[in-house]
Image (cartoon, rainbow, N blue to C red; front, top):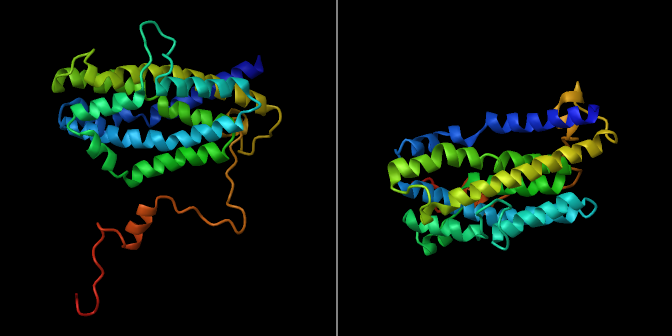
Length: 269
């Protein structure tokens, strides 16, 4: 009984974290919801999202490799990827398989970004950071933490789409519900409900498995999300070089990027 109560409190904490930082309240989406942005702005966002997804796939491969002893998590990963790639539909009535990358490209074209422009668009530092965060979390953190992170990310899409984006499409941008151009937002939101449900359940199960074996390090750790999911903040081991991330970001920071101001000599040239 105590284990069940503990597991429920972990799920509640995960949802609370998600709600605290929910993207539906971000100024970008608030402006879009009020029709103040051109449709192309969301097209650029989705182009970035598509590039993020392709880079995040490596983190799912790492997570799959780490879960050889956890059949439930491993099978859930395969189910999620099969749905993303369009090999199977989510288990809800009326849904058919969709390649979610194709749905992204379809919307980008409707928003004025042809495939060639989407292909050459460069990821911004913020999108690089998100991609690297997904990867690094999958590599280093306990399984429960990885699943909790995915839950807080994917679990935001249903409310963002149903409360902000889809009403804005119908009210301000001429795309009522059911329009093929915006199918990503209806289909992907439904998929993310399913993915988030699975991930939250796996996170609860993983936390329960670890709770008896690991002593929480956080002070007052019994009810703490970080302690319950066995989060340990570790410094880099000795002689391990720091990861610098996106090479383009390094160039920008060092002044060797085409967007940086040219360095001037004493003559001002």
